[in-house]
Length: 275
Image 1: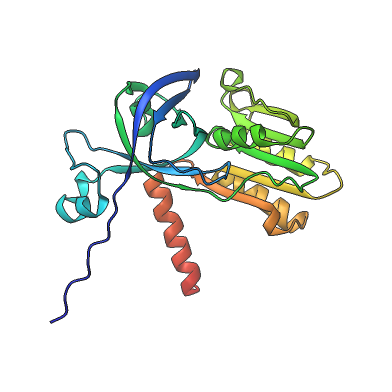
Image 2: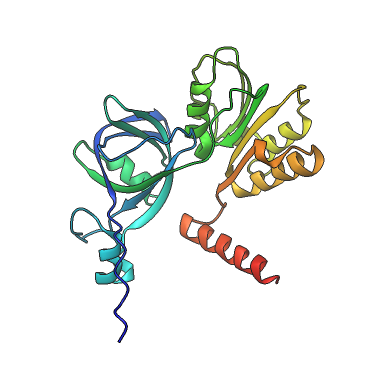
């Protein structure tokens, strides 16, 4: 008789809330202390945060292998993906920005109620992008979900490095100061004062942009609809090499992360099967 395969160890990493800060009316920064985080050098590094179900207690350290074997599916923690805004190695402080719109969603309300001492478990970090010192100029495009990665990238630019940054937010109150040593031109787009759909201003700006000569490194992250439209412009119309472009549709309008991930998985399955 064949012995069952050994259970995979899926022990998560621990982060403890140290403080919170209201960055804009709808953006909350939570600063965690963590001995478990290991910086990978990417400015788009992200973590998988695990939010406990109300009233459910889990053994510590949190092991998702144990949880999946011993708890019903509806009691599993809810996972959400968030980009790390900053990591302070000396202080062991991990900063993550959360978009907050009242009681909507899981992560935003958690961040609004977070207090020092609260524990959150996570996996990661992942990531794949960081500004390349060899690039002649940089183009960074995104909505508020991409602001942490954009802010981290701008801060890492070398003195004099040229960058064009295009960001869409609700209105002027949601703008953030992007600091760094680079030669950075930032344009903000406000949904509240524009007609059309989400990301239309970003798409139009990229299409109209007169690309300077030289090697460009591009970062376009945010809502999947406008990311796809900009992707077409960059690859099909401008012919940029794929290795110089970082694209990611973090989320899809009208879907939570679970629904968006399921949609992407189904699309990938159909592509593999040729349907």
